[in-house]
Length: 218
Image 1 (cartoon, rainbow, N blue to C red):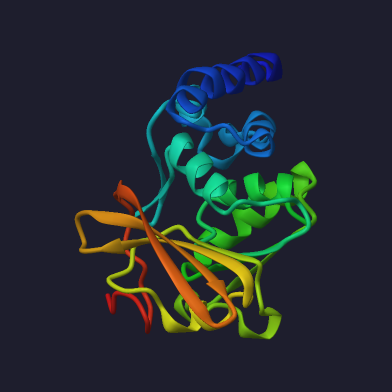
Image 2 (cartoon, rainbow, N blue to C red; image 1 turned 180 degrees about the vertical axis):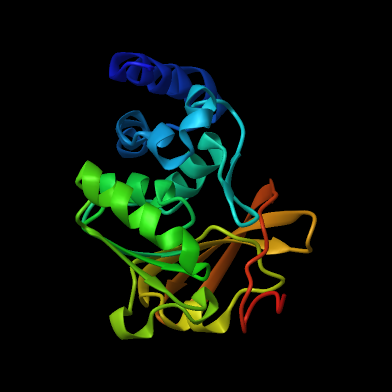
């Protein structure tokens, strides 16, 4: 069995070798990446690969994102700590854990119900009690709990789902989503202020498809 100290050293190495050299500078994000135990969100057989610079499978055709991408997307949300954040695509629960290290409340929506029990169990056991998860079509967001200070979409869509824009806070709300075709996308960042939308392209990425009414149909 790999010791907790070994995992801690692996996280430190991940931050110093993979993240900081590639432009991750936000101390809140760096500290969250040092704390969130990524290995617990993958199968035990993959523990020794958990802090590598690549995504890993979590079943049902889904993956846990590369650590750098998790850190980059979190950093681009410009979180201060008191925000209410919506995550679309719970997956393993790791991205939610990183967010939970920083913000007040995380709401997460996952389409694949089979992924939810394990994600909930791990998050609860670690003590991330500020994460609320539900099964639904994530392209509809979570209207009842809106508006959100930030929305993070961890799957790729052919377009930006209109419900997510509507549920974004009008006071500088940020939305981050991969947009493109089935094979490659661009990471798009939106800021919403006084009803006006500002859009930025943050570069090329590759994610699994966002399935839903306002995403890919299948």
